[in-house]
Image (cartoon, rainbow, N blue to C red; front, side, top):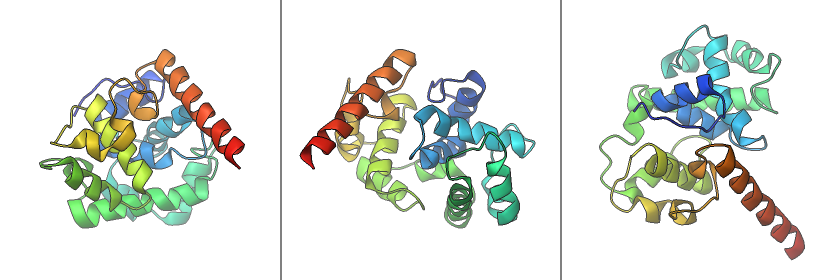
Length: 193
């Protein structure tokens, strides 16, 4: 996979995200209710605390749940809700072990269509419609995973030149544009209430 990304805005964390499919999936899983770069730094922090330079789905799935939650809770915490996110990360890893031999890349490797890719991502624990669409867009825009129909499967997140999500972050400037877009969305939603 080895892709240069700027999702975490930290070179060491981005390097891991660029070469580890599991790190990318875990970062996306953590991307809720915390700043994007905090979420995407999470996989690197987890790997460091496990004493590794990579993540292993088998290891994480088999890890004692209480010890894994404690690992994510250490200061600085991996997420605002480290206990519940530890459980979700382990569920994701267990699903990958059970369905893809622990190889996260198999979720998209050899997929023929964007529709199939979206379906596979939607089957992952913690991946709803929006998260799956954003990850399809991320794979297409930044990792070069572009099965037929990937933009359609990603919905608005697949649009060329948009700044809607983490799929569009290529550096500090695009991060600011994505943040501005999200702020506009929140303001519009509040005004509609």
